[in-house]
Image (tube, rainbow, N blue to C red):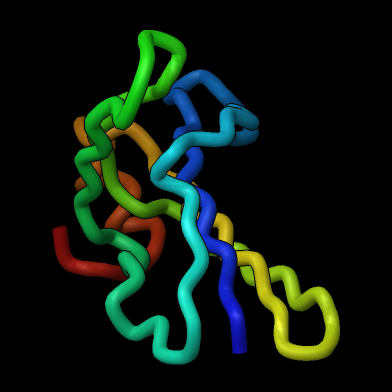
Length: 95
């Protein structure tokens, strides 16, 4: 299976993540066991020009969109880091 991994940031006041493709978006073949899981901390540094995002937070959501055949898009939504305890509690995880 081929996975396309998209990292998206959802600001505290936002209801949905920012649609901002980055150079950190990538494809993975086969095993995806090293993808960040719910509650994991992510620090993304800008990987290019000034338009490239950088953010710090926790994985709040993971969406898998199966495109048929052997293709799947994985969107990893990262929320603000300071909300880690509240998000972990909501997800039933330990902070």
